Image 1 (spheres, one colour):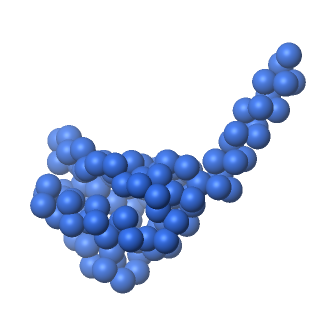
Image 2 (cartoon, rainbow, N blue to C red):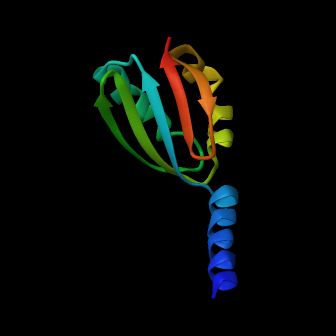
Length: 102
């Protein structure tokens, strides 16, 4: 039973890593207006299916992005073009990206 559960968990984990899933983007110091503009730009990234949020709490806007990519792959889009002018990426984990508004 334990081996079966382990195999199932590992399969789901591998699928999430390779096929993407939900990526959480947290941006410190951004206004609601700028967050809405950013949401529209995020939706245009190839591979992004939906962008939920922003949810603002204590000066941090959180987006939940459903995409066919990992957080690391999304960072590749966020460090160039218009995004580079708007936010500074501080950290990226498996499914979470932390940034600050420029």
